[in-house]
Length: 329
Image 1 (tube, rainbow, N blue to C red):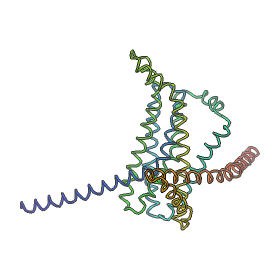
Image 2: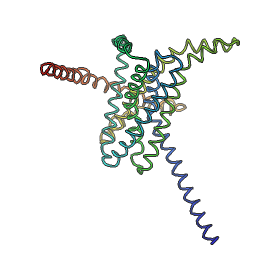
Image 3: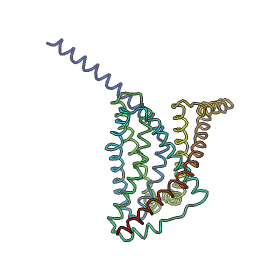
Image 4: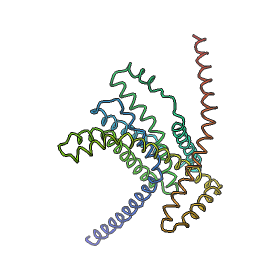
């Protein structure tokens, strides 16, 4: 009896070791996948604080919490099951869909660059007039809903990049990695956003301190937040172009067109060889810069199609339908 119990305990210990090794592997895969999605995370962190502008300080954190919960619902109810179904039924579609997402990121990056060069017309006044007709609760609900709708696009990119990283892994591994990345990215993004939106209050509190050093720190925080947010937005734009271009270049290689990826790799290695002490850093910077240039070019081309052909076409279709509806009435 005792020998049988010992054998059972040995089996359990062996299974525990296998499970621990598998979880370690899943964690490593999640870190790898999360790193590739870093560009989207930076942009998401830069964009989200605008959704609490105009609200009192006591509503800022609750609103961020609602958006974070909505982001988790997006990832775990819609995107994670959809990604696993896609991986099981049509794994061949992952690369084209990922490239489509890369083109979307490049388009968004181009729009941000264009707005830096030629500032876009600000329609916030019209939006504010519409919001003025709503109650405080309705305004908050509308802002949260808008943020969650925006989040689903960025979350889809995060999950798609993560899925592509573990596409050759078993389904259970894909599910675990996507789950870890989904939770980790949500906590990271909205945790940082919460710190950002309360930084002014913390700075103001420090500025009222009796300590001269703390007052100086507080004033620096308050004065520095606008520049910090602008810098974060610029970094997010560069990261979107870098990630979008990198996805497209790698996707072309996966579809049998490795020329651009090899060319960029050769140029990066040559640049790194010129300064061996910083070779790794230089190779990464050159690769990222080349990917960003590709992303910017693709974003510009996509904007020509979307902004000057697709959007006007859809507008004409909506106008024609509205005209038919009026005549019918």
